[in-house]
Amino acid sequence: MAVFVALGAFLMTLFGGWVALRVTDRRHLVLGLAGGLMLGVVGLDLLPEALEAAGGELFGVPQALLLFVGGFLVAHLVERLLAGRQAAHGAASAERVPQVGLTAAGAMVGHSLMDGIAIGAAFQVGEGMGTTVALAVITHDFADGFNTYTLTSVYGNARRKAVAMLVADALAPVAGAASTLLFTLPEELLGSYLGFFGGALLYLAAAEILPEAHHEHPARSTLLCTVAGVAFIWLVVGIAH
Image 1 (cartoon, rainbow, N blue to C red):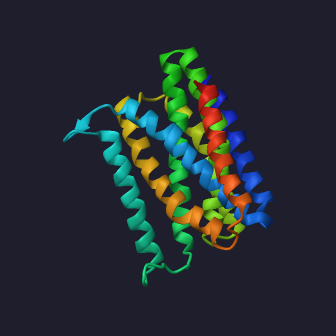
Image 2: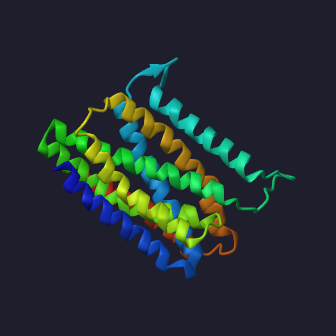
């Protein structure tokens, strides 16, 4: 049942990537929307779920929040190492290195794999729980597909690589759901991962995607796309709950 439901996530991910592909002539709007979707996914979906699942504390701070900060710092470190950009009087170079986009898209694939595992684990608890989690995953996988294609292409990767990462992201939930036929994932481990990934995703949205969206087109329409992306994720989370 879990694998069959995960096929819905597969189709929704491909649809999100297809939308990102079709509107490349309005790149600033695509990036504005992607930034809003990423911000919404982190703040309204990933972080709350991580805090609930990984409930332990280390030196008075929830484990999920520590990993959230760690994910942000790791993403910053990776971006700096791969891009090799140096700040001058507070302004960074505009160079884009394809490996950064591939690394970010690879993290999205890993997140989608965990989405599939979450579906399978929820169905192990009960059909009602499985259906609720599947609804949340399928609806926000549109954003995953959209962001995977955008993250890969915005750093200068060829379209074929962006499409390949999109397909991998679409297949990941199915593989994750199928894997739960073999094992049970501890809830705390899932929450820890979500916290770490949320921090990395927030860095990409705040430090890379949104500044790029407003660099050449500081239009009101770009800002509205960002707000619309956050609002869409809020709607998805509200429906799922």
